[in-house]
Structure formats: C-alpha cells, structure tokens
Image 1 (cartoon, rainbow, N blue to C red):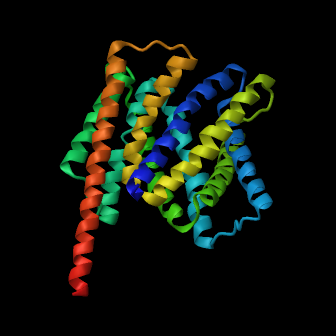
Image 2 (image 1 turned 135 degrees about the vertical axis):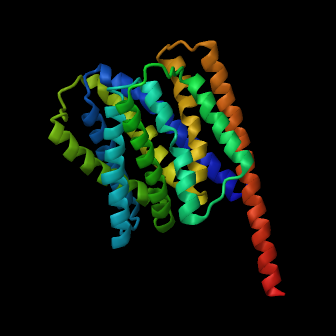
Length: 307
C-alpha cells in the first residue's frame, strides 16, 4: 500500500469521525447545551485526554517556538474564526446551503496550493471535483432560490478560513507528530472558543446530565480519533488532496442522519450521494495516477543526474 492510499484512508476515517459529529451535536443541543459550551468542552476535554496520555506514556510533548505559533494560529485563531463564520452564516441561510458553500474550500485549497507550492490539478481531477460539488447540491437538497447575500458571503469566508486551516495544518503536520499536533491545536482551540464564548456569554454547564454521553462521543470519535487521522493524512498527502477527499463527509452525515435521526432522504438526495461517491472515487483515481506519474518523473530525473 503506497503513501497516497494510506493517506486517503486516513482522510476517509477522519471524514467519518467529523461526519457523525452533527448527530451527536443535535442530541446534545436537545439537552440544553449551547453552541460555545459544546465547542469549548469538545476541545478542552480532547486536549486533556491527549496530554494525560502523553504523561502516562512519557511521550515528549515539547515543540519548537515556530510550531507553537503555527499551532496557535491553527487552533486558537483559524478554528475559532471558522466556527463563528459558519454558525453566523446559518442565521441567514439554511444549514444545508451553508455546508454546500463551505465545501468550496477544496477548490480554494487547490488554488492556494498552485500559487504557493506549484501543485497542479489535472483536467480529470478538476472535472471529478466539479462533478462531486454539483452532486453535493442534490445530496443536501439545496435550492438556490431567494439567497441571502450576507449568509453566502459569511459561508464563503468560512470556506476560505477552512482552506487556510488545511494549508497551515499541512505545515504543522510536517513538523510535529499527528498526536502532538492534535493535542496543541485542540488546546489552543479551547482557549479561542472560551474567549469568544465568554464575550458572547454563551458558555454554561447548566444543562441536562444526559447530554454528557453525546459530548463524550464528540470528544472521542469526532475529535481525538478524527483529529489524529486528519493530521496523519496531511502528513502523507498534500493539503489539496486531503481537502478533496474530505468532501465525503456530508455523505457520511446524511447516512448517519438517516439511521440515528430518522431523517427522510428524497430520491434526488440518494442519487446525489451516489454521484458524490462516484466523483470522489474518480478524483482519488486521477490524483493517485498524478502522484504515480510525478514519482516516475522524479526517478527518471534522479537516474539521469546519477548517470
């Protein structure tokens, strides 16, 4: 199994963890948990688990000053800003439409990666990406009638922040291990969310105790495991590849909503989900093919230099 395949599998596992999070979130909200309370507990408890594990296993958790800066930007700034923009956009447009515009971020990542790292996107990959995005519109059941411009702008800004999060995350993953990266990004994320939540006066532990099981599921499955898999995928793949593969996340969310929330899916949504999977399969194929070609070309150049 080559690094691309391994990285793709880690990205899918990460998307699986993130994809089930909305289900636990809805359950937690039903027990009176507020948005910022949930976000703060998610990251605070996750970082606590990481650092306790480091202490028990005597794992070196020291990082360089440059890495501290990158991880603070990653968790304390970008995640906090992403959360605020995404939740604010839902005030003006539907959640499904907000998700659709948020998932413009893979294209933004590709554009940034092209100018910063000269990463090229093949015609086949671009068409597969476009096909997946259009299919997602049907999966989410989005109607573009009566669009609120402010909501769209906020959602697209969230997509831009998400793209930058991917780029910075790739840099962090190259310098530190996935577990250490996850530990510090969740720690700084908790600090950023706490400050924002206190300013909004939205953090409170006054909720039904039944919510804790759903909060802990978010912490373990949708943060600890998902974050490790996410940064592991960034360690093996480019940020553009990880961002494109992560488009499978809404498919997982739709499946989990059907199973656990008994939400009904229209035939057009089912078709959209199937087409998203087809598009992503083609996308992974073209990207893997592109990586193989690059490896062969690099090998030829090295052989010529050796001779």
